[in-house]
Length: 322
Image (cartoon, rainbow, N blue to C red):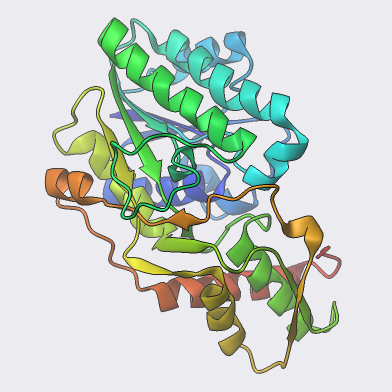
């Protein structure tokens, strides 16, 4: 079997490749941009094949499909930062909506099983929990709007062209390699930097009242594998998420408790979104009943591994910015 992973150098893409290497004998192709950092894949560079291209480039995508000839495609590439999308809405919409169209167009006529990664952010602002797949969309950022577009495009291509596409709406997931623009990862990064004396012991934060259900990225990629290999159902959409729900301030408190350095907390207005998807609690029963998947990694281990990841990064890089 041959698999193509778009967004291979990201947190999720790299963990997915780790999982596939450990649990399959598939030939793995990773779609990366020429300027993509390879830090997340440095431990397995000789075990995968790279295809250079960008999901905004039709020619590059068609060349990638011709080269990889995939049986499975995991479409993870995206502008994935909600906060950034407020500053770069056009780039976000082009990458996430048009990029998905370009990829699916390149795959038309090529028989394979495809995962399109949407997001729980499509549900946006809601007071109703837990959130099921039938919940109305109310996106609260340009990023979320772009994921609504990708979500609907995936369903359209499955219905209109009979393509074997499944879509996931993944709720908050984290762990080692998480980008520092996300709340729990920037908390961990700042704690590690404060421990090493690189910054004063003051952790800058945004909205601490938002409610999140947390999953470990390693559970998430196992779910993605099962999505495409356990009786895949063309056109279906699934919520996937963890089983630990809390406010963001609890995540911060958990990380602070793992450090012996005394720190203060300061709200930074620059870290607040204009509006926030602040009640993200999923109902994952549809996916769990279909595949038998369930989250296995405890919240506490996820936080410990995330903080230790940043401690190692801080040791290696003496001049990180907050």
